[in-house]
Amino acid sequence: MARILNGKEFAARMKENAAQGVRALRTCGVHPRLAVIIVGNDPASEVYVRNKQKTCEELGILSDHIALPEETTCAELLACIDELNADEEVHGILVQLPLPAALAAREEEVLSRIDPRKDVDGFHPVNVGHLFIGVPGLRPCTPAGCVRMLEYADITIEGANAVIIGRSNIVGKPMAHLLLERHATVTLCHSRTKNLAEIVRTADILVAAVGRPRFVTADMVKPGVTVIDVGINRIAPKQLVGDVDFDAVSKVAGAITPVPGGVGLLTVAMLMENVVQAAKVQTEERGGR
Ligand code: NAD
Image 1 (cartoon, rainbow, N blue to C red):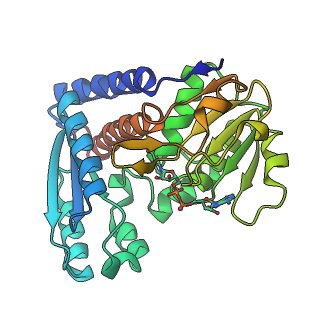
Image 2: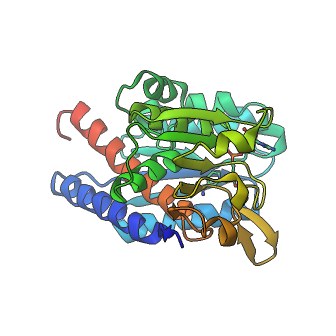
C-alpha cells in the first residue's frame, strides 16, 4: 500500500510559513491584504473563494471579496483591477476563474491587467516568463504547492522521470517548468499524445491534471511511482474523485495524494504564501513601508 501524501499535513506547514511572514510584516506596520474578484455566481467558484477567505482569516491576512454581477462588462472589470493595482494597501489581486461566458474570451487581457507584483495566482505573462527563464517570482499556486509537497515529503525530484498528463496554463505547463527547474526529466502529455500508458509507465513522479474521473489506472503505473492527483471531478452531488483510480493505483504506487484531501489544500496554502511574498516585495520596494 502506498504512502498517503496527506494534503492537510503539508498545507499546515505552508500555512505556518505564511503566518510567520504575516507576523514579521505586521511588526513593520504592514498588514498583508488579498483582494478576490468574483464575477457572476458560479457555485463552485463561490466555494473556492469562501475557502480562500477563511484561510486568510485563519492566518491574519486581510481579504476583500469583490463580487461583481454576471453582466459586468470587460471595461468595468478592468477598471476594478486598475483601482486595486493603484491601492497600496492591497498586495495581492486574484480574479476567480472561470469568468462568465461573455468575458471568457478576454481572460488573457483581464489577467494581464493585474500588476505582476500583485498577481498572486502567477498567471500574468511577466510571471509566466519569469518561471520559463528561471527568475524568482510569483508561481501558479497548484503546481507550486505540489512541488513544495514533494520537497517536504523528501521525494527526490532531481534526475527523476516526471510525467505530467495535461498541458493547461494553470497546471500542466507550469508544473513542467517547476520540475525542470529542479532537474527532473520532464515529459508533458496531452490529449494527442500517442502511447500514453507506455509513457506514463516510465514515470517516477506522475502528475495527473486531466479532468477525467479515474483516468489513470493501475496497469498504467510503475510500482513505486509517486502519484500527484490534481483532478477534481464531481461524479455525484456529494462525491468528488480525482483523475487517478485511487483504490487500485494506491496498491502499486509508492506514494499518492488522495482526492479530496490532497492537492486542493496545497493550492490554497500556496496562495497564502504568495500573498505574503507579494507583500514583502512591495514593502521592500517602498523602502520598508
Ligand atoms: P484543462 O481542461 O485546462 O486541461 C486538461 C488537459 O488534459 C488538457 O491539456 C488536455 O490535453 C489533457 N487531456 C484531456 N484528455 C486527455 C486524454 N485522453 N489523454 C491525455 N491528456 C488528456 O484542465 P486543468 O485546468 O489543467 O485542470 C485539470 C484538472 O485539475 C481538473 O479536474 C481541475 O478541476 C483540476 N484542478 C484542480 C486544482 C486543485 O487545486 N486541486 C487546481 C486546478 C485544476
